[in-house]
Length: 304
Image (cartoon, rainbow, N blue to C red; front, top):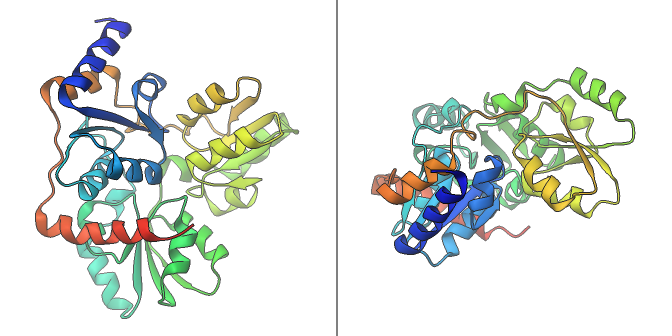
C-alpha cells in the first residue's frame, strides 16, 4: 500500500478498535502526523491516563508503553515495534537499585521515566525531564538517589542545591555523544542563533546553552521566542514539529549524531499492523504494576 492508502486504513482501524494513537516527539514525521497526540513523555503519560479510548497505540519505546499500561491497566496498550527499547533504561536493573538503596539508607529514590516498570516499582517517585526539578523539590528527604541519567541528575542538582543527589552512572547514548567542541563549531557557523538543548546532554553542553528543557519545552520556547534562528540540541525528531509550527524560522541540528535508532523503528506500516493484528500488547505482572503505579501517580500529583 502507498502512504495515503496506509493512512486511510489506519484511520478506519482506529474507529473499529476504539483506539487512539500517541507519538513521541522523536518519532518520524509520518508517524507524528498520523497521531492524535504528539508530545514528550510527561505530556503523553497524562494524555494516556485521561483519554477515553479502549486501545492506545504508543509510538515510542518500550518504557513509554509500559508507563501508559501502568497508568491505564484496563486499557490495551500496543507498541508497534516491540524491540524498540532504550539503552539508558537498560543501564539500571531493580536488583542493582536495591543494592544501591542499601548503601544509602533513608534516601528517597527518584527515577527518570526512562526506566522499566520493574525499576519504577523500586522507586518512591518518578520524574520526566520537564518536571524533574519540581519533583526533587517535592521530596522531603535530603538525600536522593537519582536513576538512571547522570546528566539530567547533575542538571537538577544545580537547580536544587539544598538536596544531596546521588547519581547513577547512566546516560542517553544519543545526547551524551554530543561534545562541547561540536557546540563551539556550530556556534561559529550560526553566530546569531539561540542554542536550545535537552538536559540529557553532557554538563559542558548544558552550560553553554541559552535554554535547557524537555522536547516539548524546547518546541514551545522556540515558538514563543522573537529569535529567528535556533541550534537544536536534542534528537532530530523534534525538527518536524519545530518547522511545522515555525515555518519562517531557521533550525539547525547541533550534531548529525543526534538520532535515536529505536525511536526511528516505528513506521506507518508498524502502526497499521499494530491495529490490524492487535500487536504488540504490553503486559506487566500485577505485583510490579501496582508498586510502579504509586511512583507515577506521585509524579502526576506534583505541582509545577
